[in-house]
Image (tube, rainbow over all chains, first blue to last red):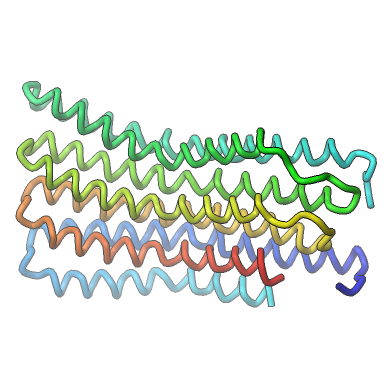
Length: 82
Length: 249
């Protein structure tokens, strides 16, 4: 391992810490949000089982949109690391 | 190295701090989860006093399952306090200290979400059983399946915590790696909060729906598993980032 200065090591380490915090905190929102959508979808399917296909499709589309900020966090974390 | 004469004290202090983080945050999971089954049991018993034995038994089963995430946190805290560490040298004590903090952060924060999620699942399971006592078997099946998936983020956090704790501490890898280890712990730790809570919602609704209409059991399980799998995706991203931080930087 090449010798680097203390200042460079702090900058490099801060990048890694930031990447971890970025993805970690960024996973909270989509996780709760997608779960809420799934819960309501389950409730809807229990009321109308014959519309399972439509409800599941709508649920997945809604969850995919909610996922978008999670993807942004992943991208920023990877950019920070590499 | 800076403060090399205090090497043992720094590592010991970090160990205690890590154990405190692990159990302190980890207790929030079961604390915010197990009360839900109890409230549902009390309300259910007030509606159907004749079924109180059945409702109490269901409540205790759901609470035992919900407790499991915080038991992981207790195990990690005890691990941090009592497992003997590798030799503390002047080279590796900052690395050891950061690993102790990372372990505690990961499991501590990781237990919160799963506890809440499993608690939500248990709440609706007890409520469903109190409304329709004959559906007990079906509801318990859906509840155990839903809680197992909702407990998955805590398992990821446990895996990362153990990976950090049992690293190779023989050489000094640089300050950047020490901060990366803390970042890896924080990543999966925080990242398990949201998916844990999020997996509780479909599990809860599936339990209640199965109680009302036991013949819909397999439809509800299928929908619940799809919803929970999508909700868990951000936890998987966090696990990947943590593993990258631990092993490739």
